[in-house]
Length: 122
Image (cartoon, rainbow, N blue to C red; front, side, top):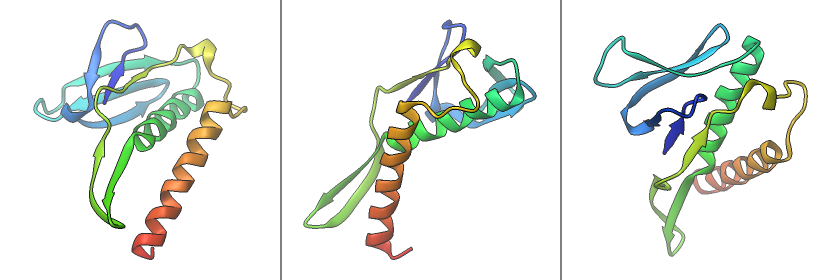
């Protein structure tokens, strides 16, 4: 999976990212091989909006996990390749409102979690 920076100048491969984090109003990531090397992903008018974007990245990533099964047995869980999360502009974010896409993602994540609980009894 990739994340396209807010300024649209860079695609960041999540396979090469150690962590994604919020510092104040900015969303950044640290690369696995370059300790201390951070990349800008986006900046927002409030820390609340930046955290909302971090939540959206997590939901987008989690919604792109696929469970392959054969005869009801899980073989593996993997990312769907070639998916890209576009960092939103500040004006696109409403911090107090849940968008239809976020609701659909939340429903999908709940379904996956329920399925995992059913299989593993967690």
